[in-house]
Image 1 (cartoon, rainbow, N blue to C red):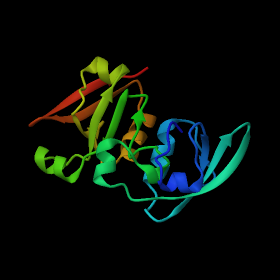
Image 2: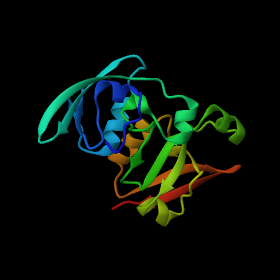
Image 3: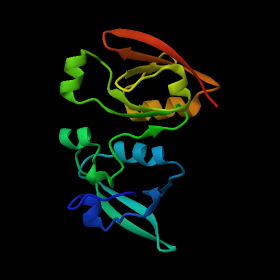
Length: 177
C-alpha cells in the first residue's frame, strides 16, 4: 500500500501505508493486478477480509467496498478499494489501464470500456499509445479489467490487441516475453 486516502473505507479499516496485502477473502495475492481484479469484481457495500503483512507479522482487517465515483476514477483514487485504483497494470502486456467514464465513452463513440494510461515493454514496442481504447484481445471482446487480465494470463508468445485510436480500429500485435 503506497498511500491511504484520509477518511476512505481503507483508512477506517486501519489499512496503513507500507502494508503488504497478502490476500483477499482467503485468496492469495501473488501480483499487484490480482488485487485489483479481486476487488473490482466485488459489489459496493460488501466486505473484504484482507490478510496484511505489517511490522513482521500477518494481521487481518475487514474493509467495506465503496463505489468509485467518476472524480475518483479520473484522479486515480479509489479510497474504498484500499488505494488500489479501479484498474491496474497488466504487467505481461506492458499496459496500465483504467475504466472509461461515461462522458469519455460518449465522446469517443465507443463500445470499449478500458483506456490505456501507460505503456511499457511489449505494448510500447508495438506502438500502443496512452489514450488508446482496448476493444479486444485475440478476437475476444474486452468488457472489464478481468477480461484483459485473463487474456494476458492465457496468452502464448504473442497477442493481437484490437484498439480504437480516435475514429479508427486497428489490430496491434504484441510479442510477449
